[in-house]
Amino acid sequence: MSKLEKGLKLIDIYSIAIGSMISSGVFLLPGIAYGICGTTVSISYLFAGLMSIPGVLSISELVTAMPKAGGGYFFVTRSLGAGVGTVAGILSWFSLIFKATFALIGLSVYSEIIFSLNPKLIAILICLVFLIINYLGVSKAGKAQSVLVLLLFAILSYFFFNSAGNIDFGNYSTFIKDFDISRILSASGFVFVSYGGLLKVASLAEETRDSRMIPKGLIGALLTVAVLYTLIVFVTVGVLPGENLFNSLTPISDAASASMGIKGKVLLSIAAIIAFTSAANVGIMSASRYPYALSRDNMFPKIFQRLSAKYKTPFVSIIVTGLIVISGLFLNLNLLVEVASTSLILTYILANFSVIVMRESRLTNYKPQFRAPMYPYLQIAGIVFYLFLIYEIGLEAIIATVVFMIISFFVYILYGRAKNNQEYALLHVIERILNKELTGIRLEKELRNILKERDSIKEDRFDKLVKKALVFDFESSMTYEKLYKEISDKLGQRIGLSGGEVYNLLCDKEKRYSSVLGDNIAIPHVIVEGEKIFDVVIVRNKEGVVFEENKKINVIFVLIGSRDERNFHLKALSAIAQVVNSKDFYKKWMEAKNPQVLKDIVMLSKRQR
Image (cartoon, rainbow, N blue to C red):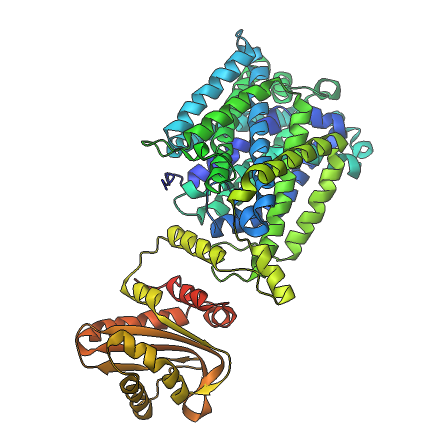
């Protein structure tokens, strides 16, 4: 299977997240949100940003563990199953499409201030330009994003510092009257989509050079934008009378006109066009990865998997996404915003629930490079808050979102269910509760391959030996003599000796020198006659093998090799030492479900290769 280009750096992630947030959120929605909660609108923006934190932290954990295209769809599928994942993937796809669509609507509204061309024609042409940019490669799209964000910051900073001194605090005379928690929450739910750019970065995880940069980029972008939104909206309410701000579709340029004159209006209109252009670019870039990911799991037709031979971009998915974005220009704006916000909130709910399921599944190969703090309280609080926020958004948006969910589930039932046998983490949780075997090793194997790709692990000779090694897993305690008896026949067959010879060698060595090297580790190692002989046997005994002074050992690596392999013998000992000293090694070793997981613990441990 062709691989996506890994071209995104930390500055690209930060720019993409910011660029996709600073658009309709500040240039289009403040006037409508003012109509919902009045002068407390800046609090609604701040609260929406704070409400994003549990979802962002959970998404950061999941994407660093599973940095694959499709973001939310991929990790929800691996956590909660293909049915729920398909619904989440299609919801996220359309949420991002809707966000890109009303970015283009905003673009058309602001372009009327400056240009005399048909605004919808301008929006369509800009969309086509970004289709081409995204086709040419994610790194080019990321660079374009960085330039746009830099320009945007410069103009918004100019607006803030030139308008802050012109605030008329009389415009806040109704603040106490407007301070109604229900209305503030309703407005927060409405503008929640303003922070949807954070979700977009998750869909580009596979194209990031190092997934550890994603949490830094997401958290940095969230803090930056939450503060910026709050300050800009606060100033806008302060310089623009309420009757002019109420339901305005050009609130920031109207505010700039009031405080800076016609030049300010034109300048902020240009900033708005840059912002909406930026959001449309990122919307197409990130949304197009969802049908690509769905197709790779056989949930969508295979045509969506097609990559450009030269640029390694999913061009079919990009084109289809772009066409749907353009068609959305003719839909109702308020419903678009509400459905996009509701879909985004549902994605955050699923992300929080997925973290709980992945951690409680105790999968050995679930190894996020970032762990969300305050587990599980942060996730539970996030789920409760998000459900309440959906309730506050209103019935119309909930009904529309439910319709999308039903359609998405039918896509799974009619197309994907028969083609997908994906194992998922929730089954591992149920398995633990019922104490009944329901799963195999498919999910562990997939996570192992993701980790190898994520951490650029290149197998050395020791890894290859471990992959082929004999593994013995015992439940009850035994003496070392009985252990050696159990393993000698099979080990002898592999190196051309009789079981008796191997047994005698191991016992003689144990009598002369103890193989116990620590509280829970023993490494019996012996030299045999011959050339180019070396093998490894991995042993776990849950109740312990009795060695010297009745010491019971749970972790045993048996090394056997010829004299010419002495140097590699030392390298193998060094590798094992690094493995057993890695974080939480013993806990993972004792909890491993089967021999393959024991091998994974060894092969995926961080060590010098």
